[in-house]
Amino acid sequence: MSQVNRTSVAYACAAAAAGAAAVSLWSYRRRKRQRTRLSIAEGYTGLIGNTPMVRLHSLSDATGCDIFAKVEFLNPGGTGKDRLAAAMIEAAEAAGLLKPGGTVVEGTSGSTGISLASICRARGFRCVIVMPDDQAGEKKAMLETLGATVVQVKTAAIASPEHYVNAARRIAAETLGAVFMDQFETSANFNVHYARTAPEIWSQTGGALDAFVMGAGTGGSIAGVSAYLKERRRGIRVYLVDPPGSSLFNRVKFGVCYAAQQAERAVRRHRYDTLAEGIGLDRVTANFAKATIDDAFAISDQEAVTMAHYLLRHEGLLLGSSSAMNAAGAVKAARQLGSGHTIVTVLCDHGARYASRFWNRAFVEGRGLQWPEPDQLLSLDFVT
Image 1 (cartoon, rainbow, N blue to C red):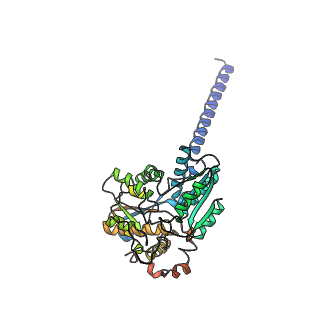
Image 2: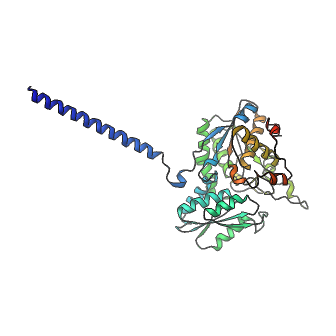
Image 3: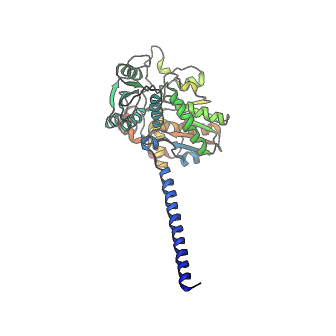
């Protein structure tokens, strides 16, 4: 072979190698872009779920149990209610009830409303939220910022037509193109926690949990999660956490939905007359009725306040009232089960939404509660 031919062959081989390398590099970059796209969420609802779980070392070390918390306030709306809001809107659309440009109406103590308002803003729906007038002002301000119409009503028993849920149902019936979400009774509530929240918990713990602990706002979370977990392993214990004024503790313990504050001729303490927001019920909802609960813990407002300060000091977590109550319940579950067990609870809410109430010293002390001093945060003796 002549020198010219050898040179031509060499050039051809080099060109082929370069071409192959270029194709390989292009393929690699294409695969990388595809992988990157897989990790990009599609809008607000694409950010919902798959929240992390954290080991609360201060509670774990003190009890001898692994106490894990699913951090639901890391959903885009700052609450696990994002899951419910998306599920309700999707169900209403699928049923043909919610049309483009329609109106979503809900009665809520705040968090579900914020989630609904966020999704409605993104999807072009109007949003009307009816809420009790004793909730933290931050919630009302946020709802209005999100474009929701906020209607505040006086606290009342569920039997009253003025109860915020009944008022929302009435407004929806009187508004053309409106749909009442009905978070307390809709099956979408139970379903989303059974189908999404519970499998996440099971996967994150590798199925190695002994107990699940949380309160009930609508009952959907504890019902859906308890059903799923007990299907996977019947021996997993489920504990309800209940605040002052709620009747669910007695429902679980004694089979009667009754709170002492509701006694005839007694000064009735409405369930919202507590620092806890978004937790506790004075009735059994369709969702709560599906829950499989083994035991219940009554958590006082003082325990919740002190637990919130304890976790801020030892974990650096600024939490809301229901999160603090859940954490206190997890400690009580650990004491009941004994060391060596794994307990999962939920951090539902961040403390930023409660600056005017739960994290306001004057407000807390005005309710006859003690603002915790540093030396009270050295142990868990305050959980009784």
